[in-house]
Structure formats: C-alpha cells, structure tokens
Length: 216
Image (cartoon, rainbow, N blue to C red; front, side, top):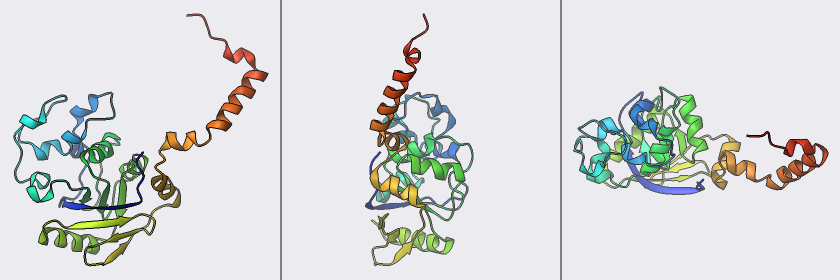
C-alpha cells in the first residue's frame, strides 16, 4: 500500500449528499474477480450518458458534460470534496478501490458511512472529517478559483489551503500509523514474518502429523 505522508492535489467538488456505494461503483462492475480496473467506472452512471458494462471501452462512451469530473478544470484531481454521509449503502470494498484507482488520495466531507470509512483506511485512501461550515468554505473556494489545490499533512493532521489557512482533523493513531508507513492488513502481518516462521517450525517439530496431507 502506498504511504500517505503529505499530499498536495487539485480539488474536485462533488456537491451531493448521501452518495452511496452503488453510485460510486455500480453493481454490474462487482462481477470482476480482480482488485484493479475500477477507476474508469467510478461514478459510472453520472459520468457517462449510456449504461456501462464490465470490460467496455470507456474511451468510446459518451460523457456527461455536466458532471464535475468531466469538466476540464478538474482533470487530474486527487482530493475529492463531498457532502455529508458519503459512502452510505452497501459495504462494497470496490468503492474505495474505484476512488483510489481513479487517482484520489483523500476525501473531505462532514461525515462518512462507517463501513466505507473503515474500508478507506484499509486501502490507503484518507477520509477526512471537517465541520459543515469548513466544508462549505472549501466548496466556495474550489468553485471560485480554477486550479484550487489543498495540501494534506497527515503527520500534523492538517488540511492546508493555498492562503495558508489550516483545518485540523482527527485520525485514530493506529490508522495514522498504518497510512504513514503504507501498511495494509497483509503488510502488518508480514512485519512478524520471522515469528510466524518460528511458530510454524516449532509446531511441526512437536506435531509432525500436521504436515501430512490427505489423499486426493
């Protein structure tokens, strides 16, 4: 998992409340057995004017010119600004996969659905909770200034605006540690690889029958 220490990026404002996971990545794309390739179908029903299908060449699909991510000024955005209760609905882990694979590193909103919030941390995506008034301010600034960027310093737990204004946010220490070091669940486990090998060797030495396989 990629480390998150300090990130500066263009902001895209998604001015909608209660954005659910089916809007983030529609259900037909969950058929894939892979963990990659979801970025092109992020917000599929809003980005395109046709109905998307898995494996479809999105370069040939008609775009919705009114959707924020299709507007030229927000191309390359890596910070998503959203409204309250972002990520509600079903608990699909594909939602943070799609956001991250599109290019987003952080999402700022007044509130998130719990399961989505947890899944973000497990996949290297930083969800930041700010007050509604702070989010309103950032929406106004983003719309007013083309090329509006924010800097997110995870170590200091600060969102820093171009004018130097700072917005503090909370993050649980263990999750912060994992993001700063790029540890997902597998990475955390592999930190103890030597102890795991020692345990397996000791167990097989005292219980050798565990190494036998059943026929067939």
